[in-house]
Image (cartoon, rainbow, N blue to C red; front, top):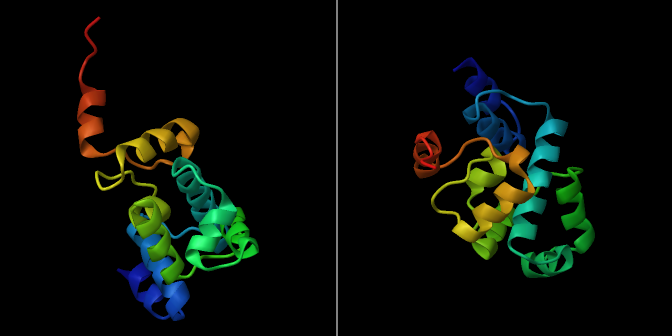
Length: 137
């Protein structure tokens, strides 16, 4: 609770980032969080099977701005994240927490799992159950 209280004293943009990080269990450094979100944005974009310029155009931002998000140089603002999630059907849980949920299209989840397994924090419940079951050969 002390972490949450300290997060509330931050500026509005930093507050939302700190709250998301607090929900994930630890408060990473700002640069670590930017880089992680950037890598997840890129993985989601690639799984959506489009290029950075097209995503930038759809989100009404410059390609340079999008590249800064993917490289972890800048945090995307909340509206960009919301519009990106609507465009790609990628849940914000994935971008901020690395959780592949049942709301994510199966094709996208599979592509991300193959291309960037190190970015995944937690498997969906159904996948965990099947992974725990013994394989019959």
